[in-house]
Image 1 (cartoon, rainbow, N blue to C red):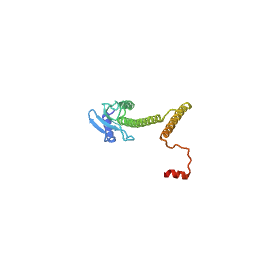
Image 2: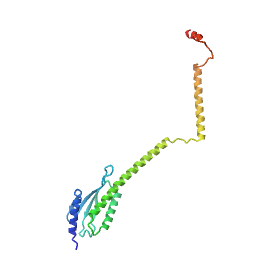
Image 3: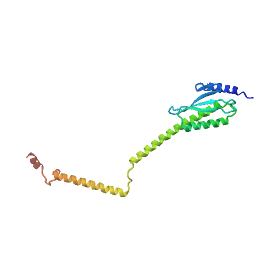
Image 4: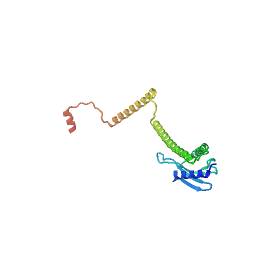
Length: 197
């Protein structure tokens, strides 16, 4: 006959030595305790954390322990649901053996995966923003494609504008009387005489 209380006591001692900072006994009868599980820090120091509450049933480990997530940090509802499913699966696989360490280790792994997913999601968001900025930059510098037809239209307008500018300039010069050649040829002495007069 199995001595359930002896197995439970042994497991509690082992858990207390493995998780000295995160293990807390809440009650002795029934034995209820919590273990806080924190992921390894991500690239920017971000972590995710959950506190698991376990209660031994009378015939544990031949019966499943009661378990629940009593608190969590930086976890989405989907992540919490995934952790609960993981715990259910692990409990079924380990029935008949002491399993709390196995359950906590599985949750630890899951939390590390979640941190990696957060990192990947942030990298994807960053890449998406860079692609959007690059596309926006391309749109800013994207003009009308040059074809022979639209080049000839532009050239005709450009030539007409240049001709109009030249006409205005010639008109202004005529009105001002400046820089107009008289056609008169002067020698140096004649030029000196004109200037002295």
